[in-house]
Image 1 (cartoon, rainbow, N blue to C red):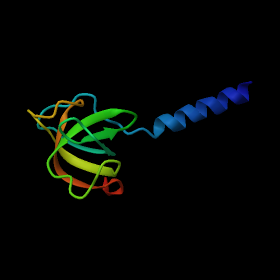
Image 2 (image 1 turned 45 degrees about the vertical axis):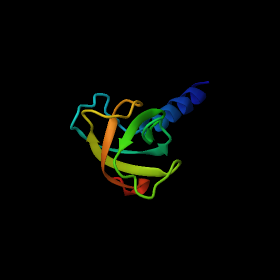
Image 3 (image 1 turned 90 degrees about the horizontal axis):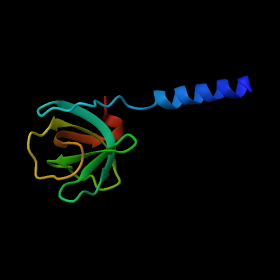
Image 4 (image 1 turned 90 degrees about the vertical axis):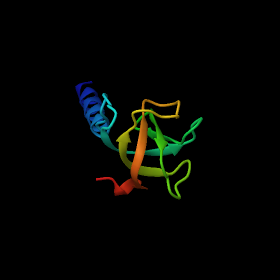
Length: 101
């Protein structure tokens, strides 16, 4: 029984260690870099990050499309027409997911 518990603890630590450290407090003007998947939004494309955090995107997403995994660098917008997600990221750079630092 102890062996099984030890394996369970190791698995929890390994899975928890794989999560990105995403900031919980986002402020207008703050620079962020997130990896995630582009998803459809009502007004603006969305970036789905981690297990289910969603951010609206403004600016040019280039040739990327819904379902693509990307790395987005940008600033948290002060105001936005986008009506979904935790915040809106004004894109300054976008690339393939493996281009993230």
